[in-house]
Length: 158
Image (cartoon, rainbow, N blue to C red; front, side):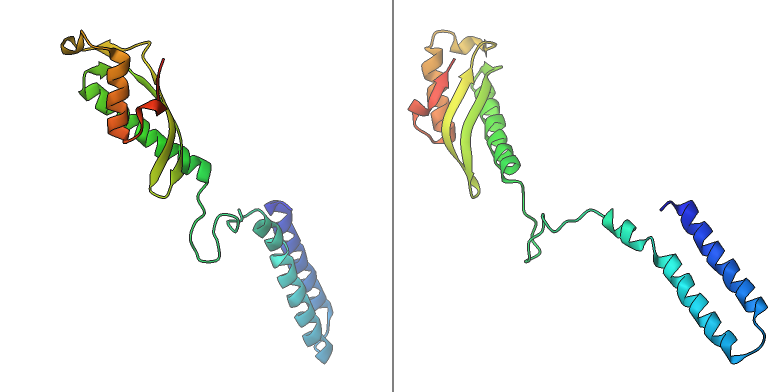
């Protein structure tokens, strides 16, 4: 029901009620007719409310009985891993290794992340001059393992 048809329905009921009131003579019956027309008018006015309420988004799936919000675990897990990735990139930049691509595979465990694997992409690696004569792969593994507090075997340099 559109708002226009709703308003026209209300006006129609009001006009019919006025006509019935004018045609009725002053009797006890007129009182009952007015009451019936009034009730009918109220029903016409509230008729679109159920359809309006059906269009309101239902948040019951997102809020549990305790009032806390259920978070999409996949999103929260990915955000936690992404925070670790960005922190590692900053740490590697501070050690003179720029443009290292970092991909961490892991799962969130409370407030921390259980890291299963770290892949460092060095295709666009930029090295500062003081790090020229080193084993890049070994040094990146060491720095990553130390920073994330993991075993070096979990770090893969490609």
